[in-house]
Image (cartoon, rainbow, N blue to C red):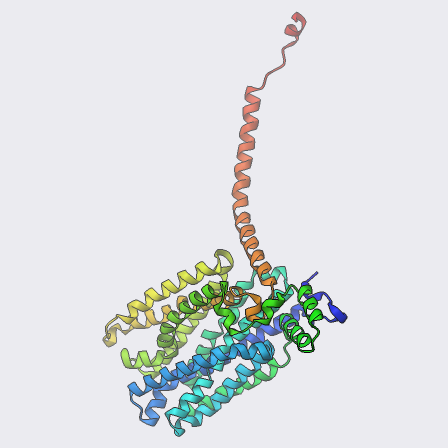
Length: 447
């Protein structure tokens, strides 16, 4: 029986989940991430047009993008404790809805000055933070269900959801190419807010994860002074009560979590340098560095994001078979090698610009694809009291290792069976050839 189907003191039980709930949550998480990325990428895509509209130089545009990135990082960091208080379901609503509001304000924020626009786009970092929220939500939903079929394909399912990044960037590039001549850059931001509002409303129908419900129930009992009942609930659902009291952002920098935070956080920080330049600000690189027209740069971004989504799916498929860590490392190294060649490639004459396009398109596949398992590994590499998850994640990791062992065994079994058949036949032939034959009738009579 699942851990979350148990009842504890006073008959309390977390809200039960079904496969249908998990499928609905997966689709909501996918579209929430798609439209959050749509708004996030749209600003970088339209930055050259915004700069031309207000007369900002390239240096001023780069400075604006830098301060927006800093502000967005602060907002993304602050959303974690907020989600621990509001819950994962409301966390998705807040991040997607907040990004939609900021998209509307961006259409008029430039007229208020660069400072106002930096503030608006910094808060729009809620859209990027949505990736972490939906990864945590899905991790806890899947762990609570503990469905064998789901566990076997969990990496590939994550790749479908986290692949919302290239899909959102693809939507941003394609719709910008279509809508820019009609409604301008201000209208593009207003249009981008509409689907985000719809997803935020649909997210209200999501069920809260059992893990957060347990955390909330323990917190309520402790607040009411029922310490013994709170401890009993923690024991029933395998929660470390003492560690639960110390949960918070600082838990990510203590004990075993420190190494995971530094290694994974540092890896993503370095990887983000390339993503910010070649993915978020791709149009600026192509138009200003390689002298590609704005229309052609949008076409290149569409193609690169199509290839990027294939990279997400490939990473998910490979990760289920060869492990998350190895898949991330190899993918990022390949992407870094391709981008290094593009970064040091001199400006090409018009007849050689195809080489730039090919390298730009191919770099998206391994560079962004590793994010599939980065977001999945982060919750697993921190203890449950630091991220409000549950101890069954450890069981899920053990199940994943057993699944890999079983998969490798199944691949090797046909060869092992053939070898066993050959050995058995050889042994039978040897026995027939060297068997001691019984004496004939005359010899028996002589004896």
